Length: 329
Image 1 (tube, rainbow, N blue to C red):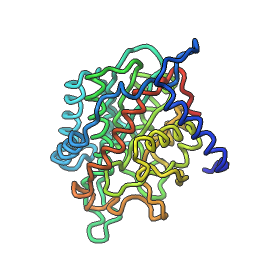
Image 2 (image 1 turned 60 degrees about the vertical axis):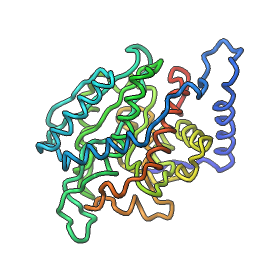
Image 3 (image 1 turned 180 degrees about the vertical axis):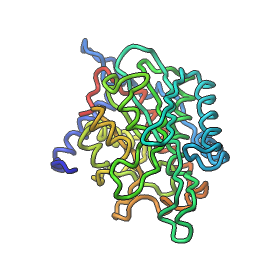
């Protein structure tokens, strides 16, 4: 799917406007309207060390392949961890296209108001089809899956300690990584299942959302993914601008990336939720990170500096953005 790209000048002008909004909140606004952003000093501290430990724990269960005992054990741990952090936890369990699905939803903040969706997939891939030596072996999934989950677990801990003023749902999608290349809709089964039978809130309850995928590798770079630019352009630009303000411009490159069929694609297209997908992409066109879909996607791939860049940017944005007034498009 393609869409018309905006001119470089128009993009820079919008970034300048967003920079003003992000930096102009030091004094109370004289306007009677609710401010778009609140002072960033209100945000709690994101710990990359905590996120790293969460990756270690996920890998300790083994491969998180739907239908396996290790998958169940990891899911039980996720549920108990969210509850320990003070979340209202829901589980969506069922069958979709012959695959067992267990989506895990953790809700924070008030029950009323426009909701924000944070997501990642928690399953791991059953076959390392990019591995020249062991193409049928399972993938550990340290970066492709566990890194996004780990950051959201640390975010959940902080949301429990310092509750947000608006509702936030963390949804961990199951069965995202079972697909085969060239087989339409074979990936992202958990999010597709949720869209057909939404629980506990419908897609229209969400003002916007942010998905994390492959967000922990050494030397990671995040381009502005194509469908994110199409369905949530201002959300994309605002997050990238904030990352630059925080000093993470070497991770968040202001470059247009290819559109990727991932969970946010289905959520935006079918669910009409403006979604931003923060996903590792090589700016030279080499694809994702080198260990993607191989048996080498293990703990050695992970860098705490990348976890800190993504996690701190996300926390800073969540404690600054007001979903009642912020328009993602």
